[in-house]
Length: 388
Image 1 (tube, rainbow, N blue to C red):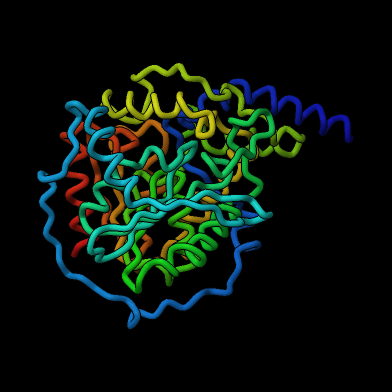
Image 2 (image 1 turned 90 degrees about the vertical axis):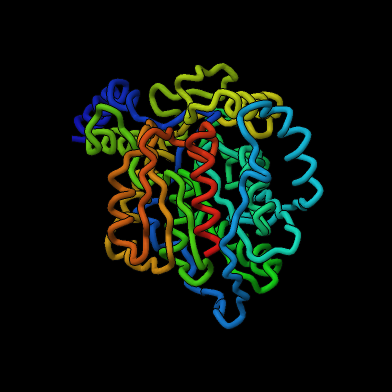
């Protein structure tokens, strides 16, 4: 009987060669999102919540924005990033480390705006680091917001969790990301917020982390922008249930630290046609940053990470969970997204109590790095959302 079960498992794993090669996780330069385990969806998430009283929050109704005065276009992009953006943000930046779950050393940055009126917290995507958000950080600072960002465990300067190699993406439980984020909020963000409102900006995997955080810890943020959040994994031409069975079987048979079939370690070689933006200048700039810094180079997903991703998206999009989110949400959905599916986003937008779904028809996954025609109105809309 045991031998028959083992043979069945081997057949399932062999089928993974066909099935999992179609799963649409992005590559190192433009990573997707992460998810959290259904089994661990509530276990391991502490219920001791810090009370943040609305009476302690200063509010500024100013909604004006003159984006033209500080917008960084694709023209001369690298030169303007190096000569305008980087000196401006580096002069306002502090960095450090906090201890996350299992004593993981987690890297963070904070930026102080001139005459700040609020605070924006960045939750980055799969395989990413805060290096990809310099342009967004610049816009937030110029709009009057302090900025906070953490590099999630296994990403960037928070160190590697890879089993197959140090660039691999691996996590024991998605709840680790959630608890790390809560520690960051408690130890860094809230103490340095000066009593002003806290706003979330979360992309892709970071959108999964952020949305689940909002469901479990609803008292921290006053508003949130979710950019192409990972709420349903794109499995390509393979039905979801088959992909999930293959991945779960791989984990059950001790393959959790292996790469999903067809996924690879970090490589500096990528085709522009396969990345998450149609802006070649923005992509080239980011790609050069990553290729020059081994510390932020990340490859693709392990079976364990993928299993956690499937599980957490199921939790996020349950009506009983999403309906707990009552704050205003602006959810941007990329019309040309090859990394995450829109179905989960549609469910969350329907169930959350105050969520506006904005469809960006021609945008790829990384709207915040898109071409000027897409990115500029996007920036204007999200800043006005925070301001109002």
